[in-house]
Image 1 (cartoon, one colour):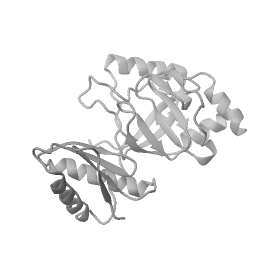
Image 2 (cartoon, rainbow, N blue to C red):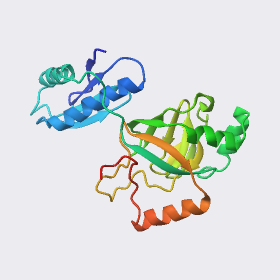
Image 3 (cartoon, rainbow, N blue to C red):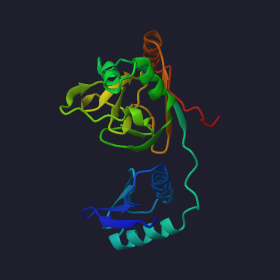
Length: 241
């Protein structure tokens, strides 16, 4: 893979890596973003990894674009032979059938499955957080079982709740804030994916892994109450001691 560089206005560069979306390409982008963050070059103002590209914002008074291009290519050339190790694993509680009433049943009818079969498929997969975008903390997830791939709605709905767990095309997602959406939503998590008052406002980050764990309505209410009280801050399964 050989990256290409493109200007994005006069204060940013985009490094693109190939034209496919896959886990290895995404891992390369995330690794480069992490190393760029660690380098802390003066003049770099923002680093945003996406599926297969990296946006690097810079202050042209401090760091010229041509110099940044050369540094980025040198950093790319110094990469490790293999992509980064697997990211953190989050087991996210999901109350299936909540969040947007009717979507789970509609999806089951569309696919010729029972709701239990849809839940088993959805919760049986492991998802990769490819990127955070669209809204603060909004997680785009790859790894949705092919049978559940479903086009988005033709007419977006105007208010989808925070925590709704959805399907759009071949992707899954976790809604971080309430707002409009054309995704189809199969459940809801009581976890807060975006908490502006927390030391680290975004719970998930690119490269993380997610598994959805079905919970009952009573369990979901209990978890939501503890999260609201500050008594529960979700942690990944493989967190450092």
